[in-house]
Image: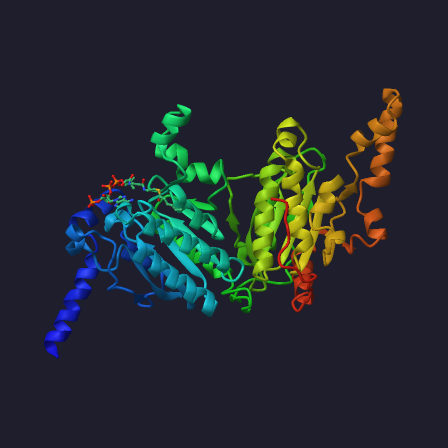
Length: 508
Ligand code: HXC
């Protein structure tokens, strides 16, 4: 018995060593943690249960058989984050560069199957040289098996990826199909083809960081949602995100205790919108002020800054916020902001997270660049996302709601449940000046001035929309938090079903 236990303990130690001390040291020297250290930071203390520690790669050729390493380069299992169950896989770069062979893929698939069957969120910590070269097509097949499960899990359980090292070639498509991607700065990258292939094909000289580092994907491509200075912050922030997410598409919303007043008036909101209509202000002031404890987790904060998305809580319940940002492009909707917000709206709708929309939008961004790149299709994504969403939808128009953008931004006509406006709201086909110039084309300057004023008085307000019931209530800014809390409370048991379909055909 004792021998058997000693043998068992020895095997565990061997497995825990992964690719050995030298490779662990080399990992640390690059500013990276090991797969096991990452799990320790991510999960609640002593909550990790490992599955498949003794799995060995089976496609290693005869000469290399004795080199097969326990675990096959990925650590899999389950644990808890703030008391909630989570399934996890963490690629071990010290074992064949974390490359994915058949058994490595089988381990990840087992985790994804368990996640789907038991409706538990899954987190993937990626650090891998891609398909294991020695395993050839078995490795490629392994990736496709993972992809298939990512797709089946989509909309059933939250899937979150952290990229903490290389992620190249087709391997990028597994994280790409998950709901949120975190990246660590300077130590991670994602691209379909690396700098050498790029150089050969397009003659561009780029390094890995510029081509696919955290900065590129959070500012230029929008592929990643979050990036942080180092892995420890990435893992801590992943825990924070997880706190806002439900366990699955059928689970109860998480409720977090909060120390905040639900009947609090916020005087500063009365002066948030400047007297000058063309002056910008920061919509995040409004978001943090209505949130419990001013806690706002912004998603994609450095990409398409003309729209702000993220999570807050109201009375302890998670709410997804979408808000036009007057500080960037005057809050116009363009291709990138439409795609960014549409995906977020669809995520919230999948997981029964109510939507709060703040509107200050002068319209869609004009220009050949936008038209040639398909603003029609991309703008339609956001419209489609709002229109199909069945979660509680509360909307507040703070200032401009012009033209098609008025319709798109969770208007009453797209089944907005409760639509508020501040007295500063201007709900119209377009701004007063543009409108007068079109209607009174040949008028002289003086008449035009009068007509602009007339149009402003007649149309640039919330009262015509309110008289038709498109706005349910015009509210004083300082009571906004109180009103929003009451609105979400009355909608808590909302039930709405779309007609049966196999799936929709969102304009991609
Ligand atoms: C097997 C691999 C490997 C791979 C790395 N290693 N990538 N083993 N298959 N794909 C091994 C190395 O041999 C080395 O083993 C150890 O991992 C660490 O690698 P290094 O090169 O020493 O590390 P580093 O200098 O940090 O460079 C990391 C790297 C580089 C940039 C990832 O290793 C690399 O370019 N690897 C190949 C990447 C690649 O082209 N993969 C295929 C992509 S295509 P030892 O024993 O020395 O420690 C793909 C298709 C997916 O993935 C298709 C899905 C549809």
